[in-house]
Image (cartoon, rainbow, N blue to C red; front, side, top):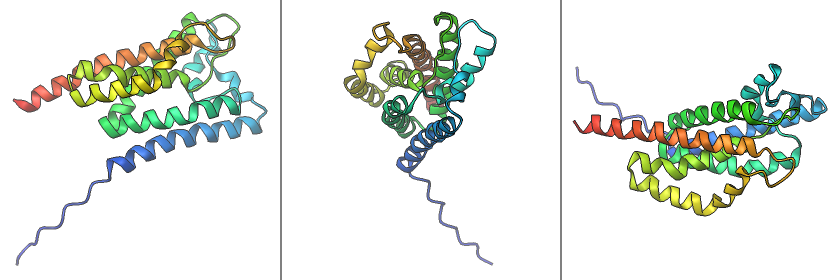
Length: 203
């Protein structure tokens, strides 16, 4: 009896995977906003409310909540594009790891430095973190391709740097700043791990 080799399963296109994850995240925040609208914006109360015990739940929920449709729309394209770029260039797991670091850092940081009697919501904390991660990861990973991507991201989204400053009333600069800090941490941690993995593979 002869056993014929079966053709290897064709891997899913990374391009398609990146689009699915980007679209999936956007679909999630839109679905939540639709539910929030039906509930007369009651979900928005679950944002980060600094120095309150109940406000700690915002660390978990704030990035997927938005104050209104305009707020959501402004975050939709950057959220899709940045997720797409990270997944396309580094894979799903790197996106999940970077997002987790940014998510927690932004939430905890905002809870600590945000103003009293304020409520912080929105995916912009993740967006600032993703931008910082993409801009810096190549430096710590020592990969020219990622450095090149970082230069492009800096050129496209560099204007966001002003968002970490208290320049606009009603805008959570604390969330932006802490999200960006989370992105820097993710770039350092995951970039160095990438170097270690490359060195281990080379041995």
